[in-house]
Image (cartoon, rainbow, N blue to C red; front, side, top):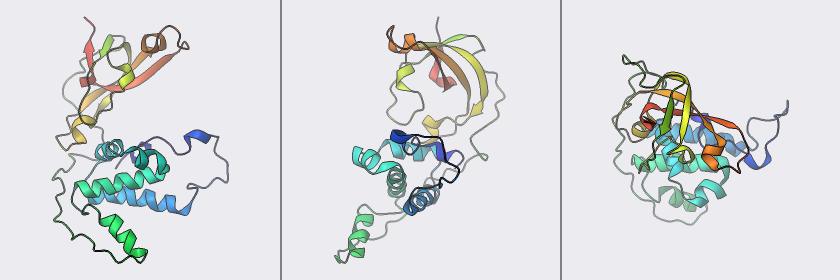
Length: 221
């Protein structure tokens, strides 16, 4: 679960401000419970950091935006439990209605189908015996691809050319790890893009650095 707190953005994007000395970690008590339930749900369902991110991506608009930041986490945790048949479809709604005194039938508890996918090591960093394909200072192109599942390749850099600034340690590839298809560790590159190349000549001039896995990149020749 390393790094799970960076999933799904940060709360309060519309009212960002420097933290106050007396600012609580959670604005409301229910947010801390939702945070804990989301982490527990992903663990109980046999998930990992990337499978939880993919659950966030699969939420509909109401569950992702209208329910707010920690509502989003709670909804993703429920989806992970449904994915692994820890919960039956409709079980949460039925239990909520019963707690309101409606006396509805709850679906039977299903047979769990958690993925048999233990990590090969703690965390997401891995060691590789092979050398990086790309070098610092090399011009590379982010592949213009549209995966059907999870990816950490931002759409706005796809097909664009940048320069490798730093070669980072190898990490578990989210694209396969999210779907329990293997860790497929790869080097990660800090690639610098020009804002005009990404968004046109009218864009504000600046340089943007994006961390990209090796399989996201190709040579420019």
